[in-house]
Image (cartoon, rainbow, N blue to C red; front, side, top):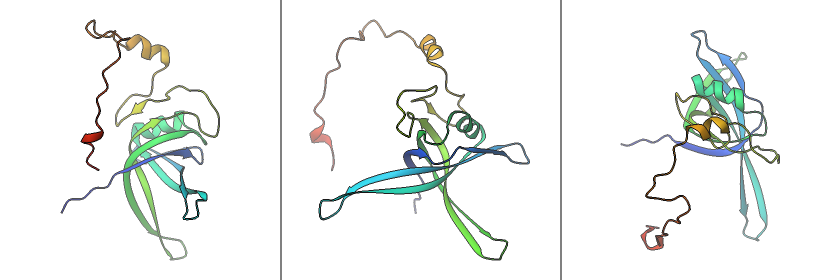
Length: 165
C-alpha cells in the first residue's frame, strides 16, 4: 500500500524562532505558525478560522530560518507530519503532532508591514546556501537568449479544456 506524508502551509510566525543545538552539533530550530482559513457558512456569513502549528527545521535550514525570520513574518513551508509522544513528570501520557521542514520559501513581511526584505521570495531547499542580496542576485543572472527578446509576449494557450476536473 502506498503512503504519503506531505504538508504545504503558508502563514505567519507566531513567535521568534528558537535555535538549539543537539549534543552531536546539529542545529534544530523550533517556531510556531498561524494559518488562516476564511469561509462562508450556510447563512452567507464570513468566518475566519486560525490553526496554530508547531514547526521544526533541522540543520542548515534551521540556522537560516533562525537568522532571517521573526514573529509576524510570512513563510511557505513544505514538510512532513511527525507524531511525538512522551510521558510528563507527573506520569501523564502526552503527544503532539508537528511539521518537520523539508523546504521553505520566504514570502513577504507579515503583520501588515509592507515592503520586502533580504531573502524575500527565495526558495530555500535542503543544503542550499542562505539567500543572497538583490545585488548579488543581479550580478549572477545571465542575459536572456537573443532568439527570445525579453519584451516579446509569450503566446497564451487555452488550457480550460485540458483540466481534468
